[in-house]
Picture 1: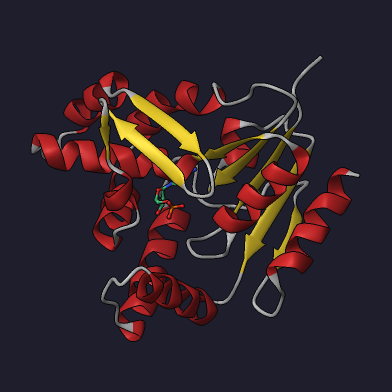
Picture 2: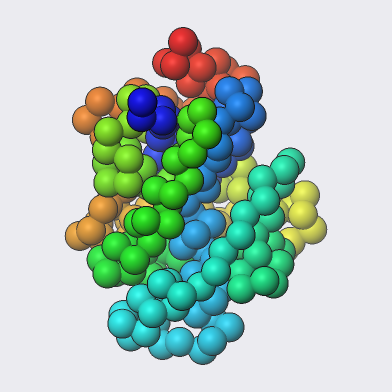
Length: 218
Ligand code: DC
């Protein structure tokens, strides 16, 4: 029997992380935050001083880095035995992740790592290409989005709560730029899978989105 997967794809800040984690918890399914894999690679590259224009060097790091995930209330990530959780959410990490994510050989190098999360009774996978490339056979697919302004506002609130300095108009510009890069890249661009349920969460509560996701599976 194949292990069922619910894929939740969408742009940055649409609420995929929060929704995916809570749905996984409710169902007792595994959780894959695929963005954290791209983000961890971005951190590894910066630690090792790798040139972002050198695709083969990036692939090498992608193939050799050791990642360990611990999914409690917050996702904690160890890179080569060192806890990098505090750097994961930084805007600079997200921007570098988005830049290296356009490289097709880098994406290929990270594919098996992502697919290895399909274990236990089920998997909720959050990202950009979960339903289109990584788990195309997933029986349940959602495309979750929200307006760029609303996403920037949510991100601003999150950063403030963590005590990280943020500027709302800068965040909106960064989000729009990242959307463009994620959607326009040649390999596995951010796109809605053919059979995905489209949810615009701009004016929805977290509980309402979770309800729609659970209804899809019931
Ligand atoms: O979801 P996130 O913001 O943590 O992702 C950071 C970047 O990683 C995002 O801008 C693009 C890239 N990414 C990707 O290309 N494919 C995924 N499945 C997840 C993330």
